[in-house]
Every structure is written in structure tokens, then in C-alpha cells.
Image 1 (cartoon, one colour):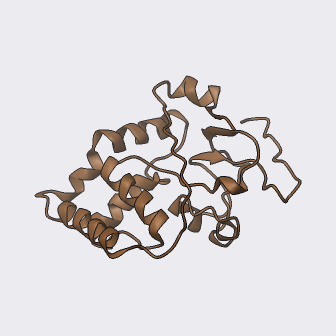
Image 2 (tube, rainbow, N blue to C red; image 1 turned 90 degrees about the vertical axis):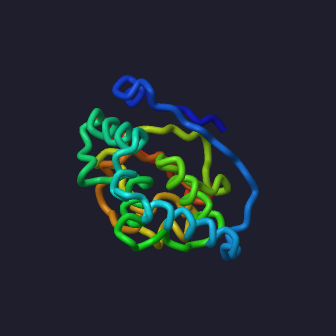
Amino acid sequence: MNVTIDAKLKAKCPRTALGCVTAQVKAGASPAALLEEMKTRENEIQKLPFPRGVLESVQVETTRKAYKALGKDPARYRNSAEALLRRVVAGKGLPEINAVVDVINLVSVESRLPVGLYDLGHVVGDIVFRAGCHCSPIPSARTAARRAIPSERWSRRRRSRCWRLSFRLPARKDSGAGRKECPTC
């Protein structure tokens, strides 16, 4: 399996880079130490003299600029790291989902970068990182749960049109259907 960055995305955002880590994990309840670490990070941000300052970090601003370069409105469609940071700044804390997702959320908050999580057991073929478009719908939370892809939190809010940076995953192994390419993508 190859993971690549779409040439059109790279042309508009030449500094785009990906880091990929694979691991065999079980998505069970988060251990107490992980939950404590999450609370520690939340408290560190809350205790800053100006907590909203985390939203102006270089990483968040760079991601917002990338969205703008791709014609997306970053004020309307936030990347996952910014959305998590906004939750913490608002006092809502980090969501507790399961050990795997909680680790990814913690990494995202600490790095200030969006982090995706995918179950490779449900991926067929290569993965291409590209800008989402109106023809690539985001699966509902129910669909994502059935496919065991507990990735970006925004998939729970947006069901129809995708105007975010997103991985476009090939069809499930058992579906037999591929994705149709949009002529504008």
C-alpha cells in the first residue's frame, strides 16, 4: 500500500507533508494514566494567561492558510486540531472515546496539527491525501463506526458535502464498488 499526496494539493500547498505510523492496537477503554494526561494538557491550556493564544500557533495558522489556498473557508470548516483546541479553550475538555482515539486526540492537541486515524483492515489499494470536494461525502458517525474508522471528529457533524482536507479512502474490501472520480477534483 502506498500513501501519496495529490499533485493538485501539493501544487497549491507545496509544504504539505504527511507522517504515517502503523500499529496493531485494540480500541478498548482508555487507561487512567491516559485520561490523567489528557486532563493535564487541558489544565495547562486553561491556565495560560491567554488560552485562546493556542489557536494562533504556527501550526494552526499554517493549516488555516492551506485551507484558504484550496478555496476552503477555515472559519467555517475547522481542522480537527483546531476544533479540539477550541473545545479545551471553551472548557468542554477533550472527548473520551477509546484508548486509540484518545491518544490521537492528545497527539493532535500537543502538536497543534490535525491527525487522522484509519483502520487499515478496511482499506483496499493506495491512499491519496487530497482536498475533499462537493462530490466526496463524509460518512456519518454511524457509517464510520460500522467501518471502524474512528478518525476525524467532524465526521459526526457533517454528513453531506466535504469542504475539508481529507483522506479519500478506497472502497471497503467487502463492498466491491470503487469511488467515481469527480471531473473537477
